[in-house]
Image (cartoon, rainbow, N blue to C red; front, side, top):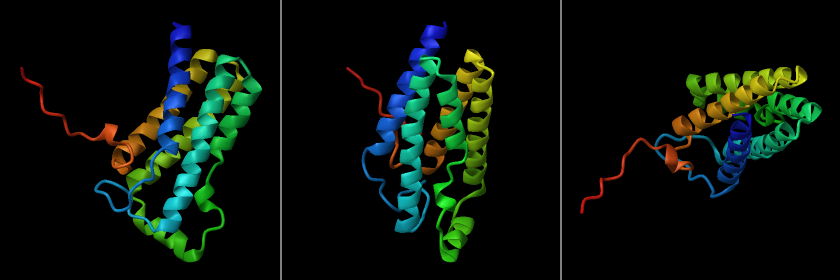
Length: 164
């Protein structure tokens, strides 16, 4: 069972990394965050860093490198690129335009990264995998709510059924 969950974790890390670094996100699409190009770029930079770290986490986990898992989880927990070097007007834009649900998911994501690091410190494989999964689940929930044009797999529309 553990081998299967390790394989799933590696696959999830690769898929997230791939999806985050692919196509440009169109601005102004329905269901997407409506941010200035500058803030959109900062958000994309943070997502690219998280994608890279998520992939590194998966490899560190499956190789039992607990110190790396702890270090990377802490980097993710503390990764608030958007809070670094923002002008007052950009800070105001974030406060005004980011919905409360986005802020909640962001806080949940960073809290989950902290719990992941704590589980790795205890060298608890099962709990580490659980928190890694839950951290990625938070990513998917946020993308489904706020980046549907970039991640069309999260749209709720169902394709027409194929009839012969």
